[in-house]
Every structure is written in structure tokens, then in C-alpha cells.
Length: 130
Image 1 (tube, one colour):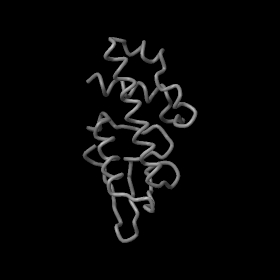
Image 2: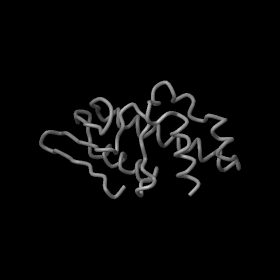
Image 3: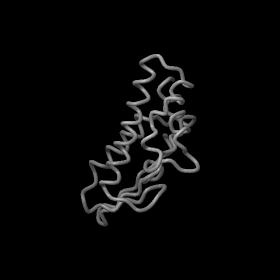
């Protein structure tokens, strides 16, 4: 969203991601406040470009992270977007996509009480249908 901020401490080699990273958790993408899946992925890609293997990353949610964790989070979201988009492109309805559960294999490692696998799928459907 236009209210998000990423803080970089270059001398300490630390990046504070704010809500642009949920380490090991499905992210909350605030669609109602101007957030987008593409914007979220772009922000994470930019942070990856700024980080190196020694960079300490303080996520907005989840445990302390490193560059590999950030790459993993970005890649998960990009893949989830691709999966849902492919089903939308086939003409499936939101209900059909939810029933197909395209993010099932992410459930055990990414789902949490606020953003469950179902809610992440619903968010992607909404974001990609607008």
C-alpha cells in the first residue's frame, strides 16, 4: 500500500520489512488500502536486490529472517499467484477454485490463524479478478 515502509540500515546490514514480509506465513495483502499482489512481489524483489547473504531481515511478522527466507516468501507468493491465475484463465469460478484448493501443498508451512490457506486463496482470487 502507499502507507508501507521498508527501513534499511546499511551500516548494520539490516532491513526492516514492515508488512512487506511475513516470514513463513501467508501474507496479508491489504487490497482495500491499495495493496496488490504485484506490488507485494515487487517490494520483496527490491529487498532481495538490496540484501546479501549476511543481511539480517526483520520481518513485520514471523521470526527473524535472512535473504534466503525472503526469496522463499517471494517465490511462494509468485507461485501462488500463478496457480490461481491459471484456474481463473480456465474460466473457473471463485467457488470452483476454492474447492480445487490450489495452495494445498503450502498449507502446512504457510497457513496461520489470520491468513489461512482458504483466505489466501480468496485474496488471490479477488486481487486477480479486479
